[in-house]
Length: 97
Image (cartoon, rainbow, N blue to C red; front, side, top):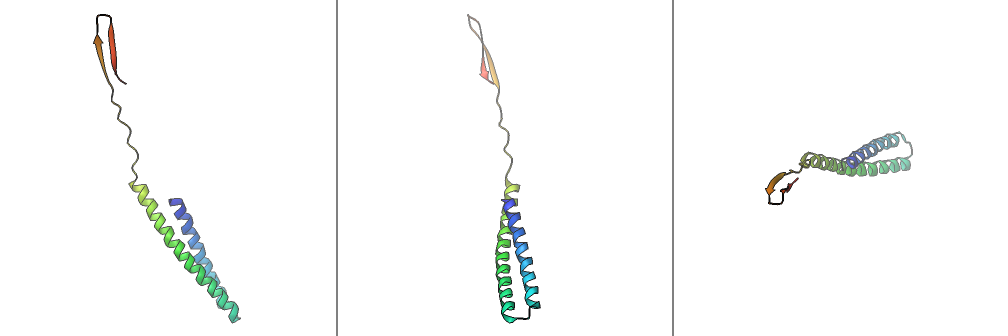
């Protein structure tokens, strides 16, 4: 869970950086139609990046909480008992080992 969160957060960072780069390209572009296309792409990637980032942070928080609250299993208690019995034919040893 935490690994998926780290990957999604990294993907969100990439998308947001790519959106910033597309904005820079749009600002440097002279043609209005190309500028609008680049800005639309940047807006779409920014939106997707924000959604993936929020999901990644949520998964990361969930994974961390799960790791913190998940206690390691306690070892089983082993009960050992034994008894010795005597009969006219011999000795008996019985119990739980």
